[in-house]
Image 1 (spheres, protein in one colour):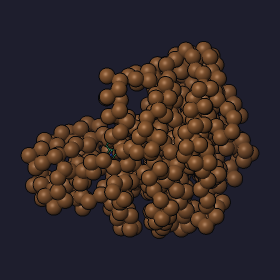
Image 2 (image 1 turned 60 degrees about the horizontal axis):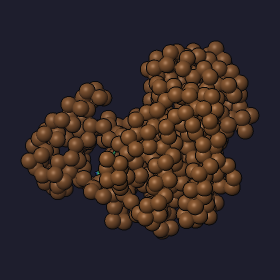
Image 3 (image 1 turned 120 degrees about the horizontal axis):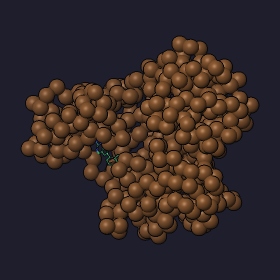
Image 4 (image 1 turned 120 degrees about the vertical axis):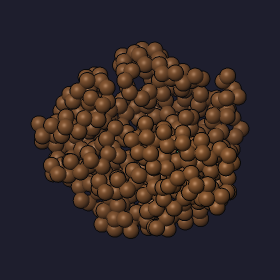
Length: 448
Ligand code: MV4
């Protein structure tokens, strides 16, 4: 195992990673910006190094500063968390060249999955079902029209370097296609410096279901079931659950095995998430994430496996702690993202937390880096923390969630807690009857 690990992240995930390190007896270094000097994880770290001013591009994204912080402190590993440099192949490669372990997959695997076209081609080659669409990049509008005519309208034009919904355009008919292609191309060029596009059949009312996988880098892999992340607003997830209220055990084991076999074939190392759209009983691969995800705790709740321990074991050359046969799913878990935002308009609400009383009790977990008196800086995302509730079944979980939300006191900033109270009162939410558009439709109807 590592001696000393540098955490190249902030907020709740920095603390989450630090907790795993403490449990495993690994010394920790917090690499932080000036805006985070008073953050909880910086106070709790064995050592801390300031790596720059508040803007992420001048601190959390500065590879040279992070590398220097490793050399100064003698860290032998770096955990990138999520966001920032977590899916940056060059970062992984540079650390490798300095004999510092990047807790994540190889630069090659990050690159393959970072390009959505090569990711999809790789998935298809490995037997993962994909959305019908162009073989690779579309060459021109004539090519695009030909592919669209074959798969049928509506179609979705996507950027190869996209993800998170950027550079995506729908064409309902052939008449819409030239404009969809030209605007997607311009947006992709401006946002990513890469204007490669591909085409897919546009699925109208799918759910977003993602499979958690782990590989040991030596050709062994397992799946840890799925998460349903359909409830989102503007590509920001709001509520996630494990397992999905819509899958049966057969479907789960079938898609899980397909993903684990693919990951094994790649000799993939570490945590990964295979993202699907799910519609009419069919799975359609869209992307793969090569990092630990925000919503990983719902998987931890239903599997009993600490995903960060697992990442650290594998990154240090160890093997998976559990076999597929040993994997059991217990009960149901829901995560609510508590943001410092107005609950109806979602405008950010940074500032000082005057009162802070997180809920507790059986089946309740709060992952947060904040404390009473802490000032949420305005420079980063507005996540205050995550409330994760576990119950014996989905109904039990939702009853416990209502109780936990009632206990949660955060004063001084606006939060999204009232939204979750409202959602628990909705019949569709109670029934697990929602798709990727449900939340935005609900907000349009109730909040305007
Ligand atoms: C799609 C789709 C419908 N059909 N692809 C949005 C972000 C990116 N990760 C993929 N996205 C979508 N791809 C096809 N062929 C609809 C979406 C989409 C979406 C996906 C997951 C969760 C929320 C979403 C909200 C709007 C659109």
